[in-house]
Amino acid sequence: MSRDRPARSPGGPMDPSAPRVERRRLTHVDRAGRPRMVDVSDKPVSSRRAVAEALVAVSPETMSAVIDGGGPKGDVLTVAELAGVMGGKRTAELIPLCHPLALTDLLVEVVPDRAGGVLRVRAEAATTGPTGVEMEALTAASVAALTIYDMVKAVERGVEIRSIRLLSKAGGKSGAWTREPDAPTGDRPARPPRGVRTAGRIKGRRPT
Image (cartoon, rainbow, N blue to C red; front, side, top):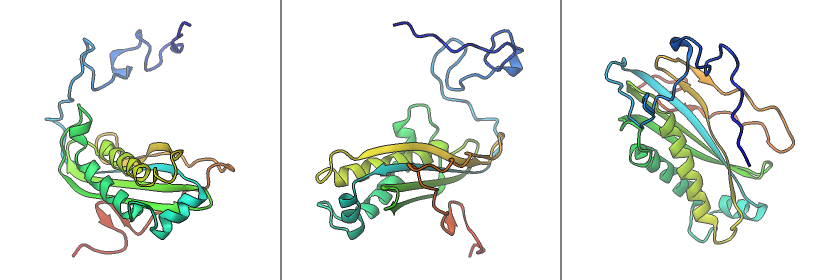
């Protein structure tokens, strides 16, 4: 079965006839198609922050075991949060073309959502440097979600990891970006409110 490529709109950002400045290019691929690490030598240093999430769907019985701390391997929430932090700090060792970053903060929180039947993983990373921390936030959320699976697989093999995605980023040349809120559906409950603390700052309090 042939795979048709999507049509390119004339003058669009992927149109080869468009002026060079209007084309979008994969920054980790050079003009010859070879993978490369992006040179950030000339990028200005700025405060950067990114938030990512992952949803882990579990049965009501598994949810109760996680909340009660009665899983066969112990405290699922604490272990998953710690694993997420450790994974986020090692992003450059896992993703070949990521720059090693000195993170200034990395928060991982797992919140049980009984109504939605999911464990909500939220990871927020911050740094001051020439490149962003989106991959660190996404890696932290992913590792925390995988750890949840490892912690509960003895009681439920059918656990699903869903919707690993970036929620927002701030800083750098491209500035701030925030994902549009999901439309309310019966399958996906509204996102819970954020906590008081966020990576890189504590709302309503001055640093001591």
